[in-house]
Length: 89
Image 1: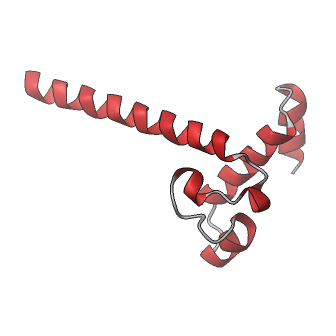
Image 2 (image 1 turned 135 degrees about the vertical axis):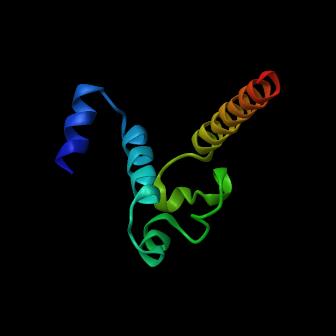
Image 3 (image 1 turned 180 degrees about the vertical axis):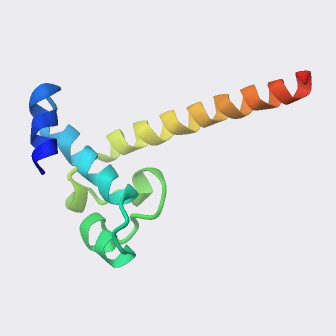
């Protein structure tokens, strides 16, 4: 918890930023599925806003949607680059 409070002060993170950070930490953690289910909500395994329960995470769906859309776009660009590289090789 101390690392989070230091990060919040250094980078002037909002409470929403902190909630998003905590949500992502739980998603990537090695906690059992039951714990994640309890902390993040019933649909936590779904991608994008479908997997977000704002009542549990305090992260707005629009924020989760933006992150998911950005990730999909970046993965698509990587795929296109890899395909172009394999064609030219």
